[in-house]
Amino acid sequence: MRKMLVLILVLGLASAANAMLIKVDDQEGDSFEVDVKTTITVVSEDSSSWLGYIIVEEGGAGVLENAVKLDAAGDLGVASAYEEAGWGTGFELSASTSPGGVPAVAAGSQFSFDYVGSVGDIARISLFVDPEFDVPAALVDVTVVPEPMTILLLGLGGLFLRRRR
Image 1 (cartoon, rainbow, N blue to C red):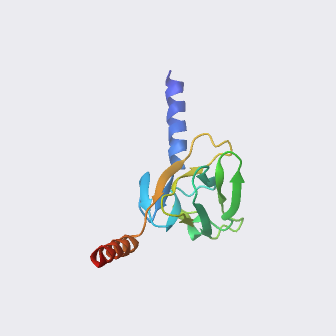
Image 2: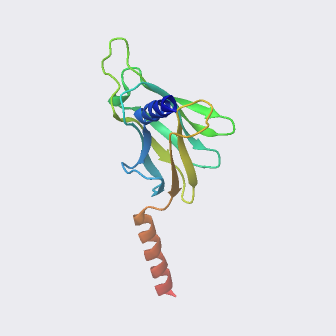
Image 3: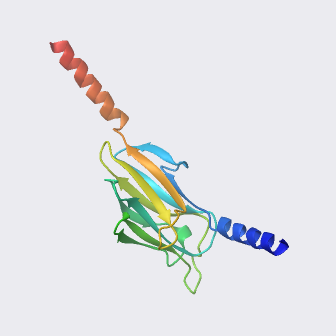
């Protein structure tokens, strides 16, 4: 029994050591209303090398583009366009350090993307760190809504049309 508890503790610490999350416009959470173009950031809470996939799951009309590797992803960090049949499109990500070790992988924001959709789109963006796509390390749901200025202009236009009649 004692060995089993030690094993559970070790596995729990190992999984917590590679905690990953997705930020939307620098905010944490699981559901967001966003503009037509918004920023998605992948954050790692430790300095381990890793390989993963960030995907707009099938059914989401928007796309991830303009991939930027940030310094925290290390020297060999890369984001390559990726598509998985039955899952969706996005990027394969790797964060790792070159043999020289400069810059090393660091905790913090490691990759950044633009999420671009059209008004009314609803999408799930998932980050998987295993190629089996069993359980996402992080996920967010985004709904694209008009920016406030667009709503204001539409409302003013409607008032002027009503006033003319």
